[in-house]
Length: 91
Image 1 (cartoon, one colour):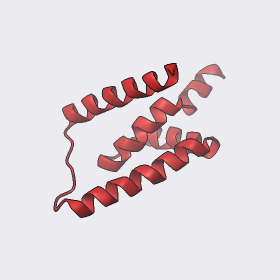
Image 2: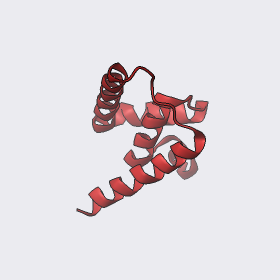
Image 3: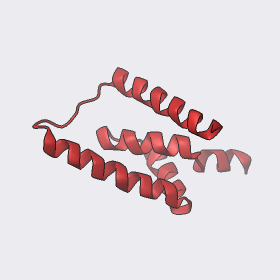
């Protein structure tokens, strides 16, 4: 049962990473399921996704080309996001 819970339920940190990943690439079936389950229980992450999509659309309107993130850049972005969220948790 514990493994099932760990498989299905994410932390907000991991959910926010998947939300950002979803904007720029496809999520695996497992990631889609995990994110859907998390957002069903977490209003903050659901709002975060809406805000993130809104910001992305606004940025795309200002730019003639949508941002492209390669796999390496995406990993660096995820680490940066993770570090920033950890700093916020410490405050």
